[in-house]
Picture 1 (cartoon, helix red, strand yellow):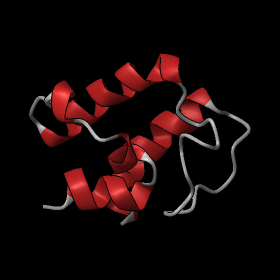
Picture 2 (cartoon, rainbow, N blue to C red; picture 1 turned 90 degrees about the vertical axis):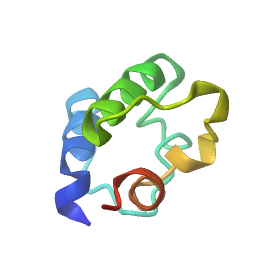
Picture 3 (cartoon, helix red, strand yellow; picture 1 turned 120 degrees about the vertical axis):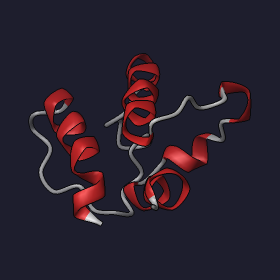
Picture 4 (cartoon, rainbow, N blue to C red; picture 1 turned 135 degrees about the horizontal axis):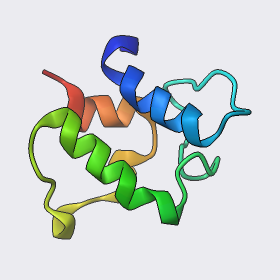
Length: 77
């Protein structure tokens, strides 16, 4: 899973330089690695990675909570 999530992990570490390992099941929102101000920027990053726009009216925040969930919902190929 590390290869497909590397750009996301890099983005998270750039914004949270003191973070160590980011386990696949860590809640990125509860741990404040993604906050409300950065969420839209994160959506844009994800759209770039998957090559399509996400329908904001169909977004379920739970799909963005963990690296595992992101992989299952958006990055599986």
